[in-house]
Length: 461
Image (cartoon, rainbow, N blue to C red):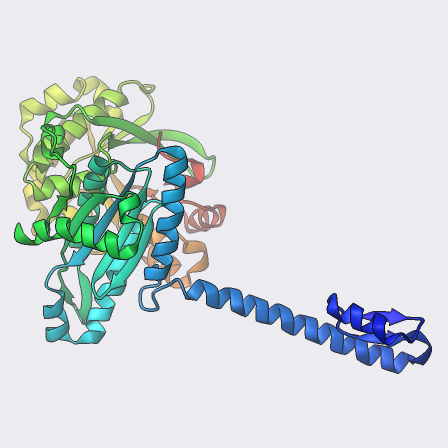
């Protein structure tokens, strides 16, 4: 607002052209008039800011698919153009994945379009949780999705596609009551270049690769021009067992925050299959789980020998692998009985299928060798008191989904309180997993949980 000592209309017009909202001559302005004019000016400015914020919000929405909140075609085109510019400057590779849900029309026909929409939303969540921060996920129509992978070679894109395919097939969608729909996807992968600078050309190229997956029986990954399968396929690499390395995460006394032991976890150097959920799911699908799991145990035990003898050493096994171990294998894998007191084998309660009594003989063999047994992931999903009583574990590990965010969730807190009351009668050590905030740590201490681990103290290294 301009307050002037001269009554000059030309000056007033010039001021308005340059952004002034009002022009008041000083000699004619009373206090009441100034207050009113200023009030109007502030109100107009506030409305302008609101309009600008709304326009900015609408601009963002114009790039998003309203059902899944993923990028739409327009948003994908913007990301594609940007990534091609970066690739041109840096010489980096870009891969693109076209994903199509298998038999999606049958889901719509059988359950209705509302369920179909739920399936699309759940698949979108899986994609968002699987891709990397730099990747772009879009829904380009119906049940088709495109994922842009910057700085990714074609071979890496194929491996990453397998990871996505497995993640979708491992996440059934709840449709009504306890009824679920199993969803699978076919994927086509290709290298992005200047020839595929538009969405239409990108779709045309990736559809050729996708068609191979559909012809091969669906729930497959195929690659486009320039892809030659390597002799050392993922299956062969996992079987060979040279791709594994071990990392460790500290287990702490929550009152003192001093480390009392470590859990040893396995990673691979295979692109797209670095994490256990990824390579174990792939191994299960390709019937090589037992061998891969045992090789991971060997790598973890080798790493465990490097830490001080007084520290606890937790290693993981699938129940099926543990049940198949013979007494002579324990002697080869673990140190002599006199040194085994610090070792503890963890099995996930969620992986114990059916009657858990088949594990009793092998757990007795562990105890005979002074090796502890821990039941992992307790308190979420298929928790069963029968397993806890029958297997008589030395350690019970509370599932991170019950721990994470407990300081802000009363029902979660009450659920853990009830679980602790049950577990207390078993006289076992209790470890809470997934502690990420100081607030959750304080809540766990209030509830009397003595031990824990989580990202609050850093990532596994």
